[in-house]
Length: 104
Image (cartoon, rainbow, N blue to C red):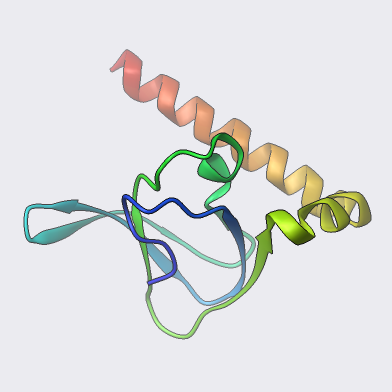
């Protein structure tokens, strides 16, 4: 488990290899909402707004990921335009999905 629903944790994970399940707890079971893999970011929304984690992220098998915390975020943000672009695209995509869900 990389992220547990309901936790307050300020880390962003950038998946380098492997896959993870994004799940929500429904009673005593987990419902898989999505499967994410290489190049995907997870945890970025609550990293910025300090909210509780809205889902549990479970590895599908071996996973390698870079973990960004408050301590190293500024350095990485400044050093990597590629990562900065990916972060902004990920945030934009998540916001679009939320808007679609509200309109349906």
